Amino acid sequence: MMPTITMAQDTVYGLAASAGVVYAARQSGLARSFDAGRTWDDAFANLRDWQPSPVTAAALHGDTVLAGVKGAVVCSTDAGANWNIVGLASPPPTVTAIAISPNFVADGTALVGTADDGVFVTTDCGAHWTAWNFGLVDMHVYALAFSPAYGDDKLILAGTESGLFSSRNGGRGWSEIDFPMSAAPVISLAFAPTFATDGRVYAGTEASGLFVSTDHGSKWHPVDDALLSGGVNAVLMAGKPEANVYALLEDKVVLSADSGVTWQPSTIRLPSGSVPMSLCLHPTDASALLLGFADGEILSTA
Image (cartoon, rainbow, N blue to C red; front, side, top):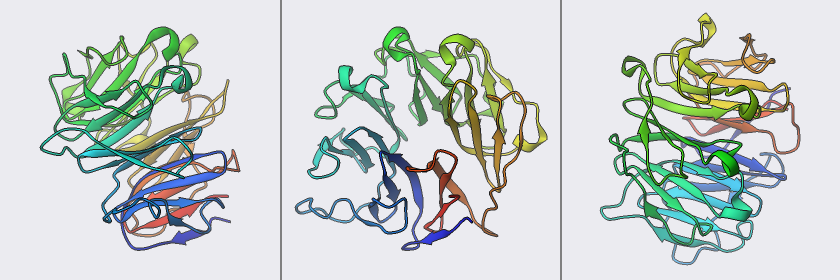
């Protein structure tokens, strides 16, 4: 059974789930669910003097929650009990993506991507943010991802309007990757859990399908499968060592059960006429997903 959870009819820009809680970044704000999406509340309800504002990205790591709003990041380090609004720059940039280091407890590092102002980095768990854009000649950033081996390789990827950039020093400097400009922009990224050994990482494009690298992000080629044509709004890895890969396209969800070697249509049926925007793993069922749509609906596959 795949119930559709209807909320206020506003776009679900992003979903993030961890330890039984789900956050939905929405046009109307940040929604939170403690029961796998059956009921929701306003995550900012206790934020004094808060004016309703679109939340365009969200990310979780343990008790830390980061939410992107126009010109700022709203941060909580106590699972949403208290919030702190930290400005990024003036004029206020539009937040497009948030990524948190897999070693966040030790290094306090997270990144924010913006539509016109590049990348901002925190190394103190979101208390302060600094623009780190040396070498990032394309400031239109749509996706960010940390290597799962970040503690050793310090590798971060950024998907932009013109293609891909990498940083191998934790975001202090960026280098352009040889990625076909005709396939750009890159709007989604996902490292395989086995990246340290097989070098596999995925990049979803706005209209040119899914690309893969098997050499730690140096060389890229399109995934040669007719199922993966068109826009890839999100890519999600689940499980290891043999990881499921989910690709969220404009009209379907495609699945690989062998770390991306072969692909097949998933059993997920999207509502007719829907525009899928985001997905995340179900917070209590490792075999299920939550999907968010442009009309405000959130679908659970559990």
